[in-house]
Amino acid sequence: MPYLDSDHDVVIDRDALRSRIPGWGADLDPAVRPSVPKERRDLSTGAHWSIPESQPELHPRERSIEHGMLPPVFGTVAPLHGVSGAVRRLAYARYSEGRAVHWLLLVLGDRIDAWGSHFRSLVDGSPDNPFTESGVLGEPRMRPLASRFGRGRADLRHVWLDPVVFVGPVVILATIAGIRALTKR
Image (cartoon, rainbow, N blue to C red):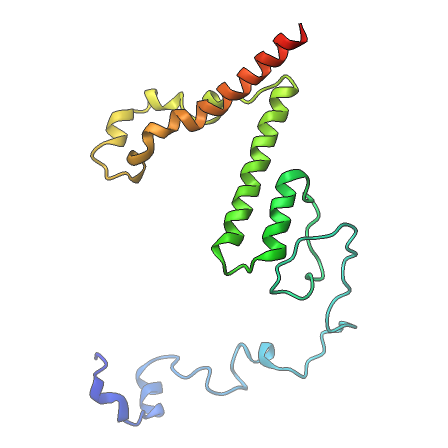
């Protein structure tokens, strides 16, 4: 039976519902409610603290301006470094997480970090291979035209940019490396 707008002032007969619907009202009585132990506040957890002891902050950590303190435990795997770290620090120090500029600066920091690692790999003598790492070589083998056209894909508007984005940085870095090699001679 569907709910009607005129039913909102009808008094619900709990006994009738319990007899008609198996299991109805099983959580009305707190003595038989399965989640009652979770809802009790008088249970002792055995913890000797209300907030756990904080992890020592060995290096300055980025933190949002909305938060007064770091959480008790935080990650320290990849500390901020270089230009990308400076951009990220600026995002956290100046702008609220509710503003787009905060997130755009974090994305910019990630892009700067990616460019730096591409440059380091070129200098180390093991440059990235965008053709095998980006999946561009898989395009011709996997029905490129049938998968792109007639399917309403949103990326068709920027397909012409793909070669510039994937190959452009490699050409620029290879040119820099070539010029550097020529100047050493």
